[in-house]
Amino acid sequence: MSVPSVHVAKERLKTLLMADRMQCTPETAEKFSSDIYHTVSKYLEVKPEDFHIKITHSDIHIKITGENY
Image (cartoon, rainbow, N blue to C red; front, side, top):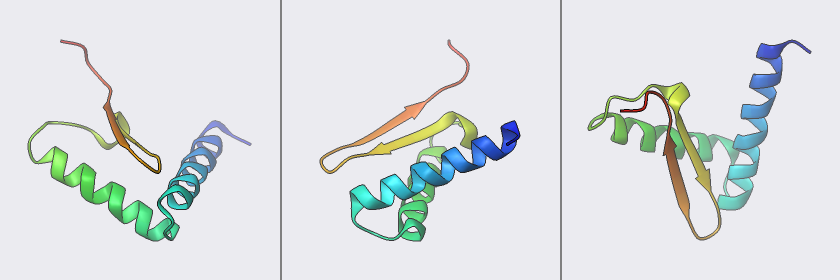
């Protein structure tokens, strides 16, 4: 498995796990994450690869990585 394939598989697994935690379909979880990203990106300059969302039954954690100021 090449590095890009590993990354794609990892992202798909994260989407499935997030969907399970939210008790919704993977498509709905992906749409939810995308909507959050687009809302945040209206106010902050952030790249999709630097934007990470972790959803549990009780919390939503957003982590933005990248340059340190």
